[in-house]
Image (tube, rainbow, N blue to C red):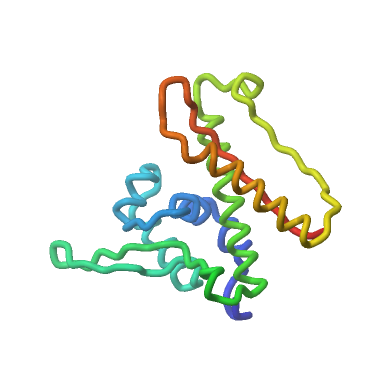
Length: 172
């Protein structure tokens, strides 16, 4: 991010902007959609914070359409495409911060339930250090991906609870 812009930490430290980023993880939404997901945020406040995030290039406009004489914009998080774009340290920091925002939002939604029981629900967060060669690491990633895919591809059904698995793999 250029020096004349606030840091991502400063931008997302503001609670409404943090919630906007959380709402847009994996989604494309209009400000009307955002207003539905954040009903306690006044519309003028929401529009102002969306504008700040667009100017800072945290959000990008991915669509526009005319609605009753105004232009309705659709937004998404401005994330690089890892397969095609070189990712800068600032972009990686943005991606990681948004990822953490998503996990935080998931935990907040869980904690808002009336029947919170971490033991029953299998809440777990762990860290493990792996000492592996690059080839062993590639094998680990492949096997972990295969295991996750086997369970992620299962259809919803009676007795199945949707659970969220989040992983972070990085060198020390």
